[in-house]
Length: 414
Image 1 (cartoon, rainbow, N blue to C red):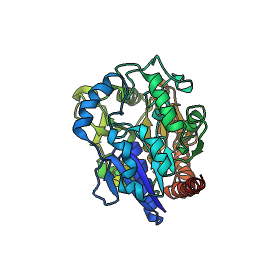
Image 2: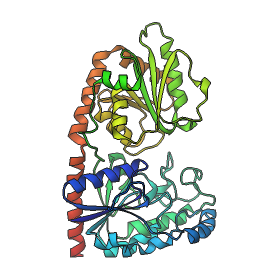
Image 3: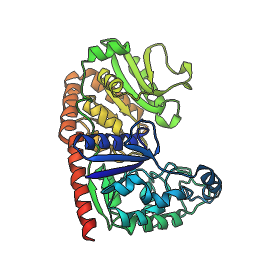
Image 4: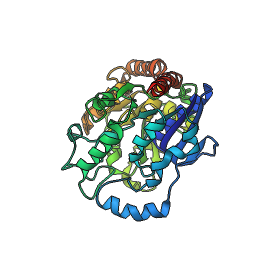
C-alpha cells in the first residue's frame, strides 16, 4: 500500500508532529508512506513541498485576505492531483489544510482521483473561518455575523457564511472518511457539515519506547534541579504570550512557596521561547529552569521525567500531544475541561481538572500532589498504564491501515 499525508509542515506544530509520527510508524510497518507539506524542515526523499506560485499568491492574497476568504490564493494546489506523490498514492490522508499553503477547493477534484481520508486536528474544516469556535455554535447552521473575527485565522471582512458554504461543498459533498483524534471532536463533527461522512475516532499515538519514565534523579541532575525540589512543568511556544497562562503558574508557585507547611523548594521548569520574559517576574523564593524551545524527543522526556506535575492551561484544544507525552512519561497533569483534554487528564486518575483561571484550585492541586505522595504516585502509574493501553503509535498505525484499506476498497467499487 502507498499512502500520502498532506499537511502544513513535516515537523513544526502539533498536527505536523502527529502526522510525521504516523508516517514514521507506517514506514516501519512496510507501508510506502510519503509526506506532501507546506513547509519542509527534514531532509528526506519521502517528503516534498506542495508546489506554489509565490509571487502570484502574494498579489492575490491582498484581495482574499481583505475580503475574509483565507487561503483561496493558493490556486496551484487546485491541480495537486498531478503531483507525482499524489499520482502514485493508493490513498491520500489530508491533515491541517490551513496556515497558508493549500486551497481547499481542490478537494472535490482530488476526491475523484484518489480515496480521501481527513484527519481533523481542530474545527477549521467545519467553520466559517476559525480553528476553534470557543462558545459559538454557528458552525452547526452556517455561520455568518461572526462573534470572533480575530480568532485564528483572523478575518477583516465577515464572509463566514460564504466560506462555510464553500467548505460544505468542498468537504461535505465528496466521499471522505473523517478521523478525529478526540471523542469531543467526533461528536462535534457529527453535527457539522461533515455529518453525512463516515466519522471515526482514532487517537494520535506516540512511540512509547522513547516516551517513557526515566529515573527522576538522573533527569534532574541533567537539568540542574535539586533532588528534593517540587517541580512544576509548563510549556508554551512563546512563554511571554499572556494568553498562555504563565502568570497563573507563577502566582500559584509564589503562594505555595510562602506556605509554612511546604518544606520543599519550588522549581518551575518552563519550556518554550523565553527571550521576552521580564527578569523581575520570578521572585528569589522560586527556582526557575528554562531549557528553551525543545525539538529533541529525548530532551523533552528528561523534562517530563524531572517534573512532579505538568500544568497545561489551554483555552481550546483537540487532543494535545504535549499531554500525551506527559502521560507516557508518567507525569500527572493539571488542565482545564476544554475540548478533548478530559479524555487525557482524567480527574483523580491521571491528573486534576480545574476551571479556567481558578488560581485557588490550582494552588490546592499543587499542594495535594506535593503533600500526598501516595496519591501522586497512583496518578503517575495510571498515566503510564493509560498511555500503553490507548495511545501507542503501533495501535494508531494498525487502526489507520484498516481505514486506508476500507477507503481504497470503497473507492474501487464506486
